[in-house]
Image (cartoon, rainbow, N blue to C red; front, side, top):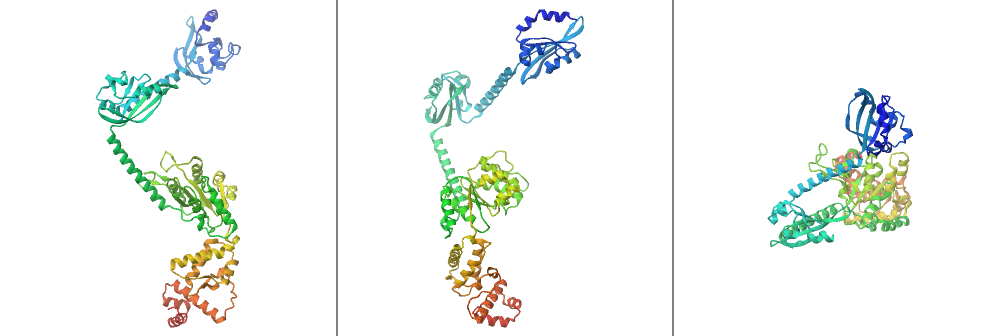
Length: 570
């Protein structure tokens, strides 16, 4: 039984000279012989291999199985310490009895890589040949010495030649006025150069190409077959360019910001500081977070930022995140491709972010945005790209984001109802708009501004607020801020009858907290004014129907007519 192993011992030097790795085991699965190449591949020392179980030294070999099957196995692919190896396994016999097995293997990782590369090159060459066969343009390839290696069918047809005639010939023998050989030698590209061939002009581009960093030749492309075709293409391009410009202009006019900094009326020092700050930050691309109570004018500042920036001619897209149902918000913001879901527009739909490209998007009530959508907004901020529903190809957009909220986003972050990473990406520039109760001097200023607007719209001549009305407005808390003040002024304007100034009794009762106002007027005038106000309000409520107004007041129709005559309200 030891004869064969003794023979192997005597010929150890032969095994060492072989470039293949060799391992021999006995019937007990113990390693009896192993050469240096095998030790190298298995990353093991001789003393840790000889006399050790094969399963410890080279478990991938499966030589124990070879002794069981007693069959020769060739070209077995194995992974040995990250290397791709190919192995053969042969059982060893002595006097017709199995005495062991031998594995011969080697690393073919590099060979496999080269094989894959050759296969890839073949595939690329096949694709290139197909492109040359079907390409409409004239395409030509020359080596570094100017000899033709490839030519497209379209170019051969134009030249009136066959491929077999030109492959291997110098380009100057085939094409008149060519400069391909010059570009192949100098490496200097020539773009859109006019070249006359057979009495026709064409526009050619010649580009050098490199292999392993060395200049290997040049690729030429006939972009247009003659100048008249070029002129026609230019005309078409110019028309499309004009149409695109008109379309962009139309989109911008439909989505244009309305309010500039000059239209933010104030006498307050803090608001004026904010206006100056907006002037400085307007040209930045950084996102802006505007915070403040409802009705403080956050949207006005968003408009003003856009109009103060270099994006002023581009779209200003407004999105109220709280007003759009959650299941529609993604399609509104990012759009969708045709056929994306049941009920989708057959042509697809462009989203708000794409509409705002090159401009500004204003995300109002950002605090009401669902968490899932917050992640998608974060991607726009980080990557500058959007992806329509149903699409696998993201689109780059250049959009400045302005967000606004009346909620405390920092508290929402702590409560895990608003993403912390989105909060910090939005909060690069922060504007905190103070409430109206903290800028009391603006109450009268804004009231007079609203009165001027109403006079212009209605051709009226209301002069303003009485002193006592100013006192009442000044002492009120204005939880609804500027929006509430505007509504109060507009309401008073519409219920007045001939007065020159808005009086305290023209204001809603809650402005005075339900208290009677000490005005100094005689009781009869106060009673008449209150009665006139009540009748007017009821008439407005019943759209001028006197019968229903009288019934609601609990008086006869005749009594109502008398009061209307008394107050000159007929």
